[in-house]
Length: 426
Image (cartoon, rainbow, N blue to C red; front, side, top):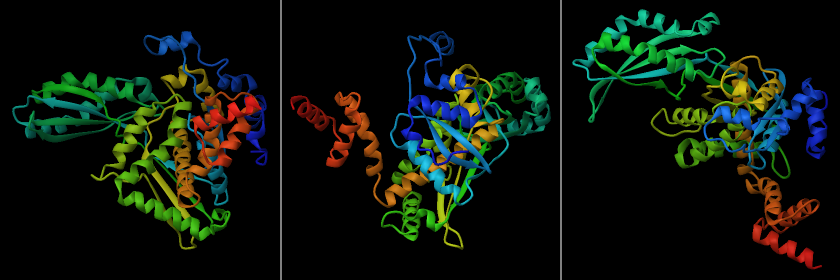
């Protein structure tokens, strides 16, 4: 990034768009799509979902200072919660001192599930399916010749024997499918539908459900970072105090699911914001993340924090990341297309690497705040602006009223309304 020192938040909306266009090397007209003025039309929205009556807007901000695998990235984030974009940016700036984020992904393999009922002998039916493994994989790959040409297709077939009081013994077939740069739901679901008659013929049973699972445990994204102690010190806190406070906060989450739920919510603040901006399915990502966090039978944090031999703070994050850059809203929504261009990603893997890095940054921001000054100080100063607007402040009153609320440490709408009445009476 050519100008790391520019105070982005001090620029006007138009100046920010001009800066982003210049920094990302894309046309200003494309960046202006992100303003919403030239974004998703009602006609486009009407073609996306049912019973459309309008378009719902959300704030779109830019997180700065991210360096992922040696590449500087401007990150579009769609979120309504104050402080998330600012805190992610600040943490990314600190992480740069340690070399930035290192991120990797596994193969883009999704899992389709097929439930097979009414079996005379479930164990025998399972073995029959495994005997026909190669035939079934070949048939599944042939469903999408374009995807197969790009290097995707069926990779593996697994069969599990389950029991339930309501069903007795039954089988679940797992089809592992490489979906390349797509999220993959349509490809996998189509393949499962196509295989169902053949599976029924082989097993003599009845195929019931056949659908992708959002527990994408074979499609993982991983990020790690290192923060030297000198980058952690601030105000009256030493680097050691901040580091140890973050580690203690993580350990709390690692031993208590009540804390782990909020810990992981902080991660998803960053993850979801980028997933939404790029037109991907944030509900699928949420479902997969929380299921992965509970895969041991106990709900645990998705990230880890510790220290290396030199005493530096080190963090890691591993989670399922089923995102795509082709198909669905990523191609239909104008702002999603521009967001992908702004990110400069050319594959679903690159997108996943950026997203998991943002999740780790946001997790760091939350733990740093909790372990030191408390979460409310920074959050409430930004939240005060929303309260001021909700109370009826306009123009210059907004910042003036927000500052007053923060100074009084009473960020409430009733107090904001009282102050506005005082001003109007004077």
